[in-house]
Image 1 (tube, rainbow, N blue to C red):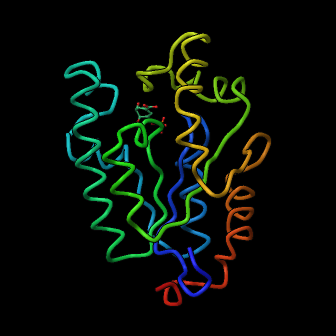
Image 2: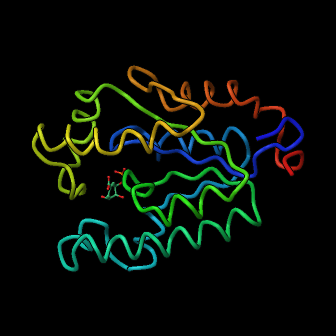
Image 3: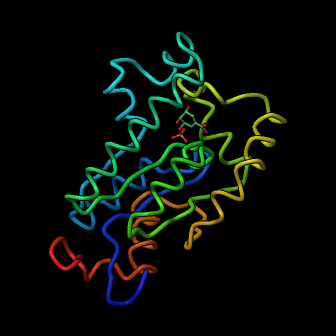
Length: 184
Ligand code: S3P
């Protein structure tokens, strides 16, 4: 991301419970950008929830729907300044990572201690098909970490409100001054 070339998109990555959706919403509101949630797009396209897709059609079907949602996201990004919350496993599919990396985007890894991530996921466990016992949760997190860490900005969200995290990102990436029009 060169100094002359402000990002056209902001991609939030990280494990489940990291706050990608809530922070993404707050950040988009702050910047006046569009907000795009990849899981929501999958659900809209499929006409059922992520949990239902996993239950009724399996993870492979979910990953196929997620690929399609990445395609739709790329179309959105081509037209509008967009903050996008990716799914926790989106970057684990090489094709998704490859396509998303072609965009002039800023990448942010939202993180928190594993125990905090687990506590945040617990109340909505039924909606999170990959939320499992602690050992499996830890293993999946470890397997994903290299993908998340490839983001240029890492933010610990523990103990912070979504608005505080959004402010931290906007300041770190100097995005507040860009506004809607100054971005391309
Ligand atoms: C997944 C994370 C979920 C959702 C799906 C798969 C994953 O998104 O995409 O359940 O593979 O880690 P969140 O990270 O928003 O919970």
